[in-house]
Amino acid sequence: MIRLKRAAYLIGFCVFLTLSGCEHSDMHSAEGEVVLKGKTMGTTWRVTLAGVDGSRRAVLQQAIQKQLNRDDEMLSTWKSDSLLSRFNQYQGEDPQPITADMADIITTAMRIGRKTRGAMDITVGPLVNLWGFGPTQRSPHAPRQREIDAAKALTGLRHLKLMERADGAWLQKDLPGLYIDLSTMGEGFAADHLARLMEQKGITNYLVSVGGAIVSRGTNAQGNSWRVAVQKPTDKENAVQALVDLQGHAISTSGSYKNYYELDGQRISHIIDPVTGRPIHHRLVSATVIATTALEADGWDTGLMVLGEERAQELALCQKLAVYLIMKTDKGFESWMSPQFKAFLRH
Image (cartoon, rainbow, N blue to C red; front, side, top):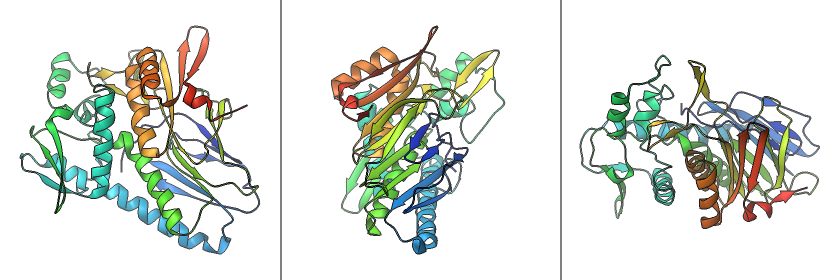
């Protein structure tokens, strides 16, 4: 399974969704809504449908799980026979065939990687593994600088080339040890897939979530727009920080305060800075992004988390992104939002 990063909480209309991948704390589903849920990629998924006959529940549940299983078989770094793992295991420099779906993820990842000047880097896998957050888990301890330098030498988007040819998509690396980790975008990719699946099934009113990525379309059972809330970065699940109306968009949150371990009294985050080769260590604890697709939002939130408070704000304004940041200070939590995010805000 894909080891996913999501930490922040979001609240869906009529249900509280804990997007740490551990559980859902349910309120009663609204009348006229069908709620389906399950597990995938090391986290949980949930689909809330409005105006759908309950008799379709079993068929839809099966179709959703089947789709997510296919995605996991393609993107997982935890399964040695996944398409991504086979590419990572390949030690040559010849182009390798990939699916159109994987090409879409990598295209988006490389574009965001360039715009964040390498802060969002899908080749950071060796460092993720080194710090104990990948499939090759190790006992928590601080790697030595020479270990970090050796892992960093195996990273870099410049070593990756994507080619679209008449016979399909091909991926090439000029560094044999290059190791791609797409878990930073897996949730968004899967959420978009579920949204497309709902459309294919003739369903136009839905709220789908995979981990911390959410996509909404249409209205809920009461005819109102779907709303979600960014929760304060605390252990209190119902502490709402901001309420937003997605207006048919997608939202994704990355946070540094859930997936971590303690080492010598210091919190070690799963979010690794590709430049330093070390877990991030700054005031920014949560980055939420609203975009047209969950894949897009899921890529940006990770890059912004790596950049930290000031550079994340500068980039959000430059790229005109809908972004909500939460910082931890000595006096508590502070927040900042871009003008584009304010357009989705509900008071």
